[in-house]
Amino acid sequence: MALLNILEFPDPRLRTKAVPVTDFGPALARLAENMLETMYAAPGVGLAATQVDVHRQLLVLDVSEEKNAPHVLVNPRILAKEGSQTYQEGCLSVPGIFAEVERAEHIRVEAQDVHGASFTLEAGGLLAVCIQHEMDHLIGKLFVDYLSPLKRELVRKKLEKQRRQAASAAPATAAL
Ligand code: GNR
Ligand code: NI
Image (cartoon, protein in one colour):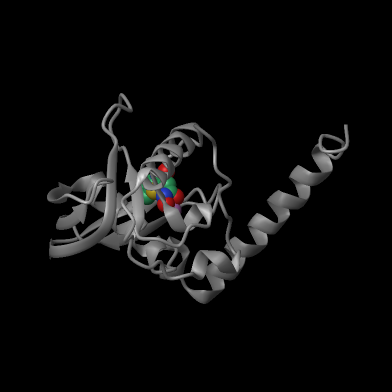
């Protein structure tokens, strides 16, 4: 098991469009395990392969309170959407930033598991939000793209400032 590095906005690699998974071998199962471990450690409720610089259609989720309901979706496809909901979203690739995004309330998704078996999943509420958020990552889209260009620029500057302050607060860590 291993923790993976999470790319952060505005890293251009987050704009990569993922291609379908075609190899359902042990490396895929290992990647899914490492993504789940990285997501739980962050902590987060979802993680797309794009965020760990792997540009394949793979995402992991767990929106349960007890963190005991992991989902792995390979090559996910939305079959149906219904209604709308607005949720205050965050993203591990845009740390410390939260904004309201409107998405479908209920979705039906078809995906494959790590062995290549197809299944469908019905989701509502936070699980539906999360699946839509992760599927956006797979096409190079971030939740801040739903904000106005002005707000997105403010987000970029705020992250830049956070990073500057983090760097000056702990300068010697890497050099020790
Ligand atoms: O951990 C996460 N929380 C979250 C909250 C509201 C809407 C979406 C999310 S997903 C996010 C983890 C993440 O960045 N996944 O890509
Ligand atoms: Ni995200």
